[in-house]
Length: 143
Image 1 (tube, rainbow, N blue to C red):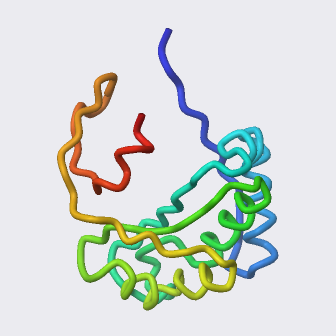
Image 2: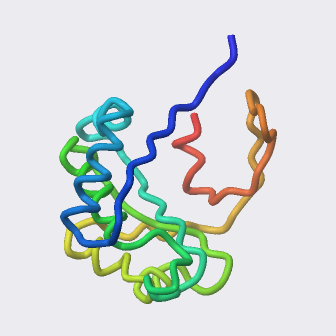
């Protein structure tokens, strides 16, 4: 049997906090709720895909309001969260500060996870890829 992925697309006309939170909540509900993906006490790393330390107005990375809405939804599951990234340009924490994600994380009490250097990992059951360079810190989460 072929594995399938489910995706929820929800319209959100702007980045006003209330509208973004409602859209993210609705999208997660369509997928079974945040509790389907995280359990109380489970360690969750939020990776906001901060490519460079650019202002949210540049639309290079997901908007900090989207990060806030996702983080709040997963906080409600009781998961133990941290956030981090491995950007292509610049330092991870400096980029998170410039992009606005660090301020959101600080407001929500989510600690920064400094991801160490990358190493190659093989995916034994990979379908579209059989190896990738990933931060060593992610290895325990990969099973």
